[in-house]
Length: 330
Image (cartoon, rainbow, N blue to C red; front, side, top):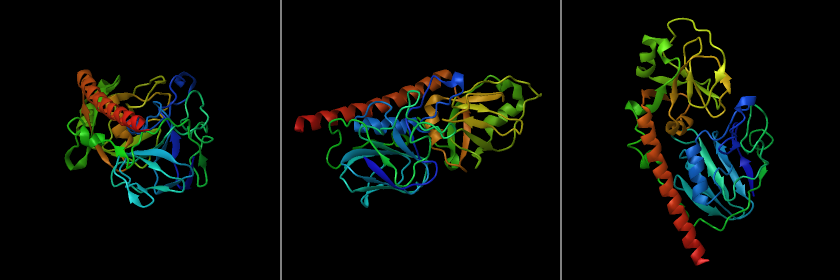
């Protein structure tokens, strides 16, 4: 059990989302950085996809009212437990009365607080994720507020050793797989989408120019600022299904990247789709940051997914070994 001591707007309960309902207009929601959520749960020995707290406005503080293990992943938010600094991507154990503090990260956008047993709120349509647009899921479909008490699910045998342990952040462990562009630009791999060729010469400008994430961005979509691109002729399109990662171009010519709370359907032409292995990086991109899109092949996308899966499996095996060692000592 924890209590929220300090929070800001947009901090919510999230899990891996609620797939399977897009046909009736229900967005999947879920963590903007699903990789950080997955690793946090692995470090604690939680069930796959257990709900966590997604923090995107800082500072954030929570009080442990009972003893319990926790993990902080995602953005390096200079976390502290009772004033003692914690390493990034770290799992530890807190005693009753201790306070976990997260501060504004120097890079990236979102941190994830995983709790042993997972955040225990009532599932809606098979998920505990908060849908702010629909006002359901999480804690009554709303953002977290000071004074909220949050319960955890059934706690597994302790999987965190005294002093804690952690994982090497993916940006470090996989720096050759997820490169950073010149001047710190985010490099995002994508595949040409259905209406790519309708943009003629502007399609090339989509790939060659830098784009800035506009302040008019949220969990539904990132609006990108840059030199507008337009199809060679006006195209009337029926609404069609869209998913996170799809890049649409409205009449104004500035692309929109569909994110975790992506619309279920839309009629804007699609110029590209971000490969799934790069979506977590988009989820960590901050408003005002600059990115470039790089065309990828299906083979390249599969290779990146394989490297990412190997990284996750290595952490899972390490966490299992730690859990076995603790069980043998009990």
